[in-house]
Image (cartoon, rainbow, N blue to C red):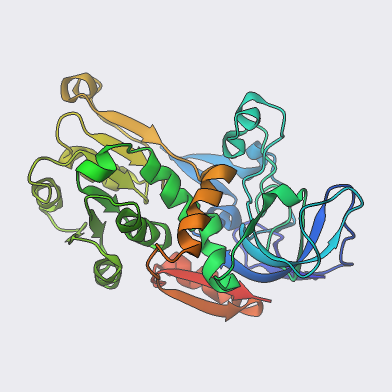
Length: 350
């Protein structure tokens, strides 16, 4: 089995060859067909997250060790099953739900394994899809994709699910008021498409990249704003005539937080998704005075992925920019992602 792994933080991935594992117990072995490249992989490659004021959350503090095979947006073909595995058969092509928990804590028992305090996520805590094969611990984490192709389906495991989970947190605001989408990279662009698919009142896309703003218009945004403009706060506030009440931040930086919260009307809700890093500094009295809600959103649950794939499989979600690359190009793709030159999503094919 060939895998591209993080063997030293901050360095290019290294090709490692080892025997292909045999599935045990309830495990399922899949031959990887497509693996999406996610911005969060850059944090994994770097070895941590910026917490602001010079502080870093190190991967070692999260129980992550090297070598690490990244890749948490994976579609694979079932090759073999462990003796206790059931629910799929060799030849089946499935999308992998990667946000796996311990299975026994309160978060896992209520169906939100993505919020488990001791996670076992694919491509983060256990080997992921930047490889030609992958082991999944249970067939219950495998989701049907037909009639989508593996390349089309792979980004839904994180990009799609993360956008979907964030939009659901808006509740009725989504359908009653335009939602500002700050950052229309792979996840934000997916969110723009999902606003339309979910019957939302419309998406206002904010990004510093002209090409990404144009992609957002093609995906259905009702308005686009250059986030680097000196009057971006005023533009964003004015973009919702009845007041901006819903903002989702897919960047998660001090600058985008200032923009999103500053533009919101009283009673608004700011959902932060992005992991760019830094810290939020805001006068506490303004939260009650403006009746603001600030909520974090981290990926989504297995049930939410199944809901999302039901929409995708029936064609309710508009196509988004997608480019396929050979797995051997992984380091070039990660470099382009870091430079911000990728519009939409990239997938790797072994």
